[in-house]
Length: 332
Image 1 (cartoon, rainbow, N blue to C red):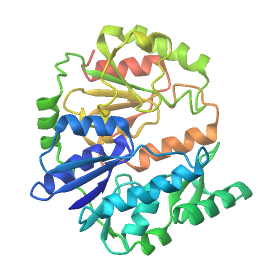
Image 2: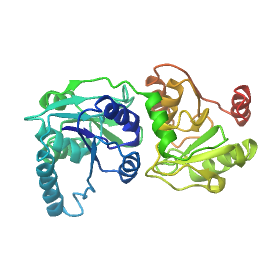
Image 3: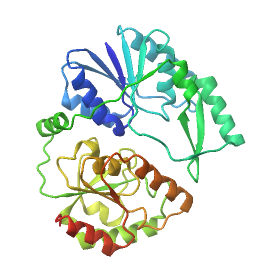
Image 4: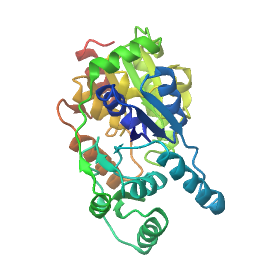
């Protein structure tokens, strides 16, 4: 059996493609995200067994955390695993520990979905403490990166060397994904614009008053009837006129909907890069909304641009430029 770790919506297209590529093999799909578990349960691939792990926070209950980790490792080992696949290159502390232990006897493949994180390496007492904790508690070597406001931690080269992982490129099977979406989800919409919300105000990239005022302007000019909203899987708050837009179900990732919409509007979401790479119109509002941190804004803009393979992301600065982009693509 092949074990696949899918811990973010970002990795759902690659996971579906990998499952299809291994349709004659048994696949154990691990996730700690309820929405991902939900969508794969609906798709119901015959060769896939789902493993949902509702992680326990270490600080909240250390005893239960370590008990859960040992139990999870034992249950995974009982599945006669022959290969492991994972996509993430940051986060995944609990899963990284599992991978590090399972890699002692099982072949591991890392299948990166994004090319790079544009944040600078930076050291501090805080990052040193977190880096040490990652090594001691999660058996994971990480590199601290500064986003402009906070630290994030990517998996270091020494971690990949320790688990002896091999790089594998997953070819996204768009035709198969489109077929699955048509089969399982009733999305017969006549609207061409998908508006991607969430995490912008919550992560303090843009202040709430700035966000609401300018986003309301966009919605009013385009027309609520011409837009469908897709919320972030973890940040589902909607602000002002966003709450009046029709919704795509939260458990359906935006990056499997490229056959359903022609234009994608968001801030710094990776869906913009994916939609541009698929030849669709991607509009980032990162230059339209006044940022809390210019440094963080630059880093997220670089992140979008650096992960482009083909296509182009538009960065309008004014409402007039946004509307012109829509009209030029005959989408209104």
